[in-house]
Length: 332
Image (cartoon, rainbow, N blue to C red; front, side, top):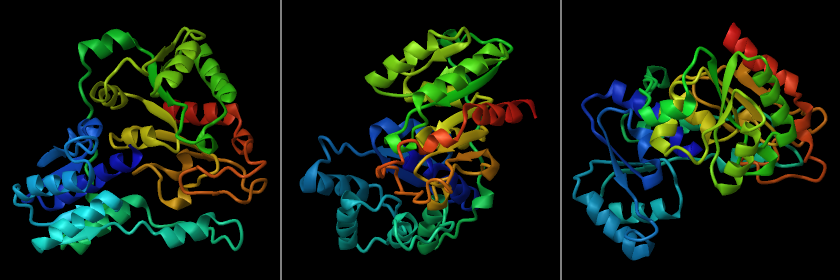
């Protein structure tokens, strides 16, 4: 979801610079709401589990896309399915540009020996480069962030609007190496709750996460679990109305950044240098594990490699540091 969310600022800049063009985004059904705030954007569902499964399904998908009279294709994913589509579009000589993921640079950044520790090109810029290759140079300074979404009655009923500022917290990540220890996150939540100044809204997904968040919410008067209660459209509307979002290096940070919500990110064995920092956010909003004690950071691009002894890397970020960062942003 994070990779998908990061396409939004790029598409916004593209459309702002070239209002005469029309964009069709090919994505999975789950992600359709992510693009709802963009004008001149149509979304086409890729049903990769059924209708568009396998080579035959991708040929069917190509035929359906071909009927839209597409002039050029920007592949912002560069995976096996999109490479197969490239072959099909090549039959009709449709211009087709693919994102350069910078695999060699990222390997140098994440390897244990002879690590080249430097800032790499942002993923947003890599996406923009694809459109440049197609003849549409994109200036990311021309990005117009998504507008706040009016909350539905269902969301308002769950959140119970009051005068307190809204703090979103997304404590989970796809891999353990990117997740702040839950016992420390509970301390952050409890101390924020005890100020009686903030409403803390918890985000997550999956039955196991929902269960854990429900238990955490029961421990705080001002803590509410949103996981499992909202569809993505409703969740995005709530995120767009937050005062701040606290997230790991994960999808929720990008979703919030697309609406211009201040985002505080906590980084473990991954690092902003890999290019996945939330769009338009100050680098001061990032809390990083101590590289002097854990010099192999970043150990991987996605946080899926956790060397022995690095399980406690995120413990070098104290709950008070997190709290101070949140309060500084909220109280100025």
